Image: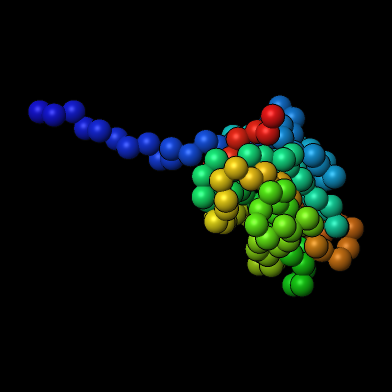
Length: 156
């Protein structure tokens, strides 16, 4: 019999962070929290009202980038939401400020959910990502955990 060849899930370079040993490539205006975390972990990032989690500049290695992550709502209301935004350094569109890629509106408190977003990019550009809580009161919380970004590497 011939041995089975199992293709790799992704040939793109990726950066992963579970926040167990710090924040890695992320700068958190939220805080590292041990109140809520994905099963098997102890920490996540807590984003309160108008707080964000921002990556350092990352080198795009191909023509697309995929961000996978888990999120958890606590004390969120009907009109509360969070966004993922991006800022690009060398892109053709010359966008110098953060631009929204997608928005997640509140749908259920106290339950971990998984999602992802893929965007087309240009090779040899630098990009930053930001998770931002857009809720309107201080006790509204979004926890972010297990963030994976495929198609990028750390900038030199």
